[in-house]
Length: 465
Image (tube, rainbow, N blue to C red; front, side, top):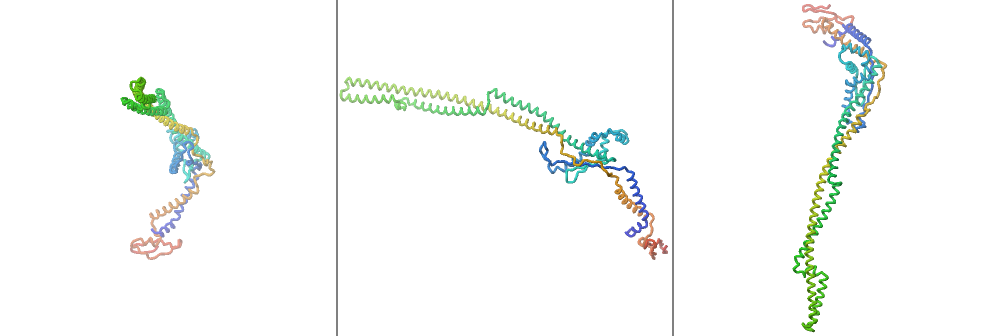
């Protein structure tokens, strides 16, 4: 079938197409008149997700903004929000809803759940493009009811969003509170162990006392080295006691030096007297006695100095032993203080670790407690819903336009279907498709221009009717 044949069929069946279009449009008009009018009320919510959280202080990354908005859309259309709307609006106490529930379910199931499902079926939630605005639209047969339910959905969503934020914070706050009590007990126990250890050993500041004792040990060690040097020197001098005259203590002794000077003077006098008076002179003998006395005194004083060297050596040995014992005792005291300091360091680290854990948990407890008491969410009503003045449906013009399109399609389809059932020759193109049927001629039609008269041509004879 070409375009010419198609147009000739439509021209021949135009009355059928028009009849079908009229019937369909009439039916659409009747349906529009019969169907109850519907009103749609819309409220707009703005989600402030770009501002910093006043409690946690963080900001939502821009990459998560789209998923956050989609999550809020799902929350608004959730069953939990619908049940909250039923509770806030008191719909389960309305007789008309109870009657509809009885008719629809026969009294089976829960009334609140059924009303919530009905509300969700008439709810439309759409996020605005490239913005944080969410539009909540509800459709009902009464404009005031539609506006009330739309605003109630917004309120129920904000309360639910607050609950979803506060409930986990309350659970965490309770857990942190219990954990804080345990950590406080651990901190007090660690502090008590440190205090008991310091009281037991009489330690106020281990580091300061250790520094003092270490300095004292260094001083005693230097004294020990000095005493050991003195003892070695005394021992060396004492070993030379056999040649006492050559000892520095003897040669530098003023008494011995004066005695030796006196002895030298007396010996010089004796030599003079021997040359003048002779060895048997009484004065020479008297001078010899004086010289002998001086020699005896020098020897005695020399022995006394040598003996003092022995006493000094013994005193140096005793002093060395005393200082060495003090050094050993000081070393033991320093080592003990180092052990105390190490143990105190371990106990202090335990206290610091317990304090740090307690501070961290206490900080989290403060934040979660503050968050659990929050009464605000980052959602605000941008435009509340108002009772619409004009119905949103059924739309008569839209339905008539749609009926016109459907009627034309059905009319054309009906014309083609009838034409296929009752095939007729409406032009030379229809005869050209028949095998073995020549076309002898055509008679112009008087009604539709070049319309071809109905003709039948047999395989034996041809004629025009």
